[in-house]
Image 1 (cartoon, rainbow, N blue to C red):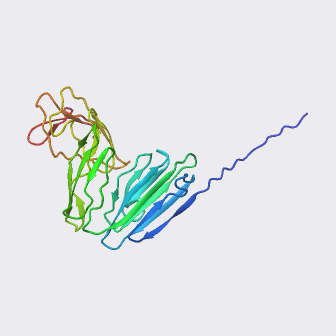
Image 2: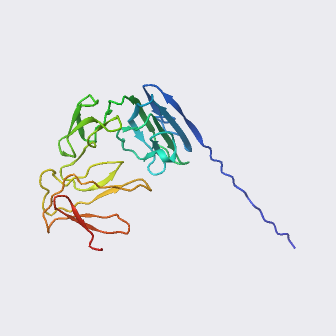
Image 3: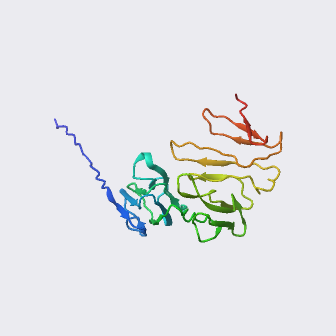
Length: 276
């Protein structure tokens, strides 16, 4: 009788973590992902900590950005890289707007998986005095007028042909209650003249009806989706609101439990939940 044999094969997959980063000091400088622009390594776990003079802040301006969407990402921390200081997470191939810290420490952490990569990112950073708002950046298809960003300075925005400005065209750098400077309104966006609705990302932004502050068009059916980081909540603050009563309305979805709110004009938005 022939013997019976069994074979067990153990396969061990070794995955190496690529570490990099460091602590950076100085009035300004540049941070590049490892291998930029030829591609960052798989399994990257790199952390950069930027430290400014006490009471100064830090602004980072992206000069190039391309990370494998949804799998590789750059986390930003308003302070040291601790969960309590988490600011936002960036991924994909769109150039992010400038980011300004609220403290004298700002951190970036690159995390990549073990498969596909992209060419990476390049960031310019600089210290901001308490009297400076920093360059707020230019939205896609936008034009910025003004080169001074200190308290009292004003800048203006417009859009290239075929796009209209959505938001406040003029921003003023003001001193706030904590002895630091900030812009009085978020940077506006430029949208195609016939566009209506879309997906909004980022820590803040502006949504306005088509043609605002002029009248919106008839038979409008626009949907805006606001996407926040997991665990975050979203707050809506109305600054202007006027719609034809009984015929036009704004629905707001996303509450827990799910509900639809119908908002109509009554000096400020009056929202009612028909399910209550």
